[in-house]
Length: 277
Image 1 (cartoon, one colour):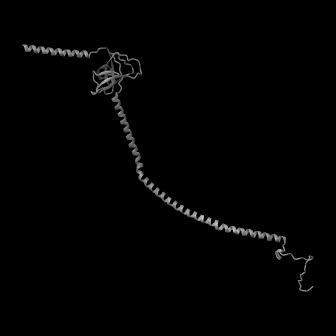
Image 2 (cartoon, one colour):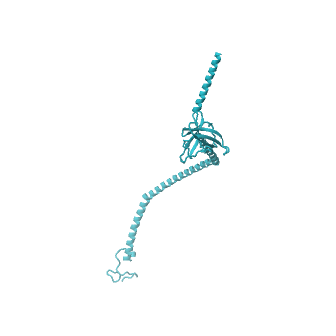
């Protein structure tokens, strides 16, 4: 009988302890204030978000997730209903994001406001108003990554198209190289011809210089002597012409005194018949 009494006392103590723990749990999790309901409808994935997950407004706990299901008004979208403390300043510009917490990876609803509209969002628990859901940081990174990958793919496609466009040009490079080599050889040949022509012109210039030197040192002095002799001869000719003009007889009798004529002193008659007078 004593053993049965001990067992009954131990069982009663355990039941009382469980009841106390249950009461403490209910007391700790009880809603101490009035709340309003809001709906969030989205086509995004809500991985990590569960019922009873927390709701925060700019980091401050203000409510919890009441239920998660499908939106009857929008086929294929998820409807999340949340309850938020009535003192939370929910406006028409308030929006929600899903954020993962800590190392657990469990999600919670983060409410924020871009202050574009100051009017409060009127609560209606019978038909809760809807708050838009925007992509979170992870979703933004994934979208940007997809965009970057798309841009990389487009760039790769452009490079491929450029390579295709350059193939005909690349195919002509050997021919262009051969043409360039031939052109270079032609230029070298032309340069050689120009060098030979320059050498010949140098020789011609040297010969011309020698000719000019010969003309200057030999021919011109001789021409000067000839000119002097010519001037002397001309002077003598002018004298002769002058004498003849003054004394035409001098052209026949020379430059001596003229023979007196008939009636002039010293005139002597010349016997041309051979008979003595």
